Length: 90
Image (cartoon, one colour):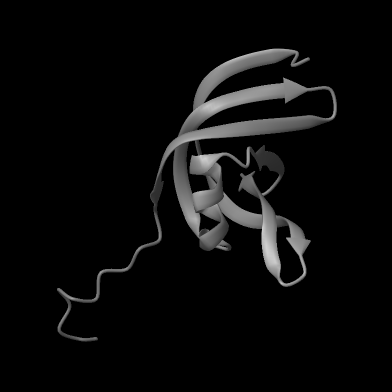
């Protein structure tokens, strides 16, 4: 059972947690280069599997366990999108 449950907005990097053969089967959100939040593998969480090494801002629910922080994603926004269409130098 979770020790604490609360809503939060996190900014961090999506990194692989587990691999199944050569595909990602789990991800974590690394916040401030030190805290890892295991992303729940539900409908919204699995969308982050395609964003490995990308930076996102995600809203959701954190569940704190004695040895693990879990994050259930409600919504997210990719923060490192580059818009080259408006820049004539690219």
